[in-house]
Length: 219
Image 1 (cartoon, rainbow, N blue to C red):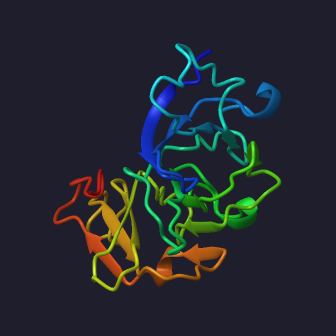
Image 2 (image 1 turned 30 degrees about the vertical axis):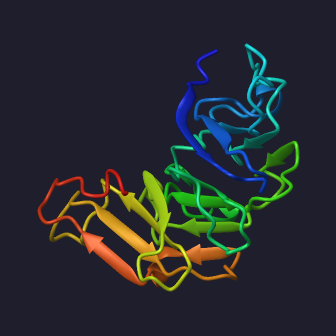
């Protein structure tokens, strides 16, 4: 109860067949055995041929892959790339999720926010981020930054690789422009490091005025 299943939802071809797959977020779900309060969960339901779907799908049992947030109150996913995109040029779309309450590598940067990326392909039945690191973790460069409110991937510079972008509408430009909101963009690449600090972003865009809440969405 109160998992808030369906927030957010996206689609893409995660397993490389001819059918799109669906990812369904439940940001208030409580993880394995309901023992990780508010960690959040994301469910992958693979595409099927017309007429092959059951009338009901119970995500407690019938997802093809379930991702559990790593720590209590992570609220994974607060956002999902829409539609899913391929960021490592392997021809599989990737699961790209924002986690605004995430605390970065080793949980040592409270509330910095994260983008957790799980590469598409042959996904396992479960991915528990408490015991398995995401393939890529992008994290905010300071505590409380709350990146991951929105996330997208697109080929901004026409080099054939998708850039990765995220926003935080509550972020500030130092003390000059509180809560103006920020958007960061990381250049696309085939080989991403495991951990990416947003202080290495190739582009940072600031909201024009105080309290603009810029970065609420990206498309």
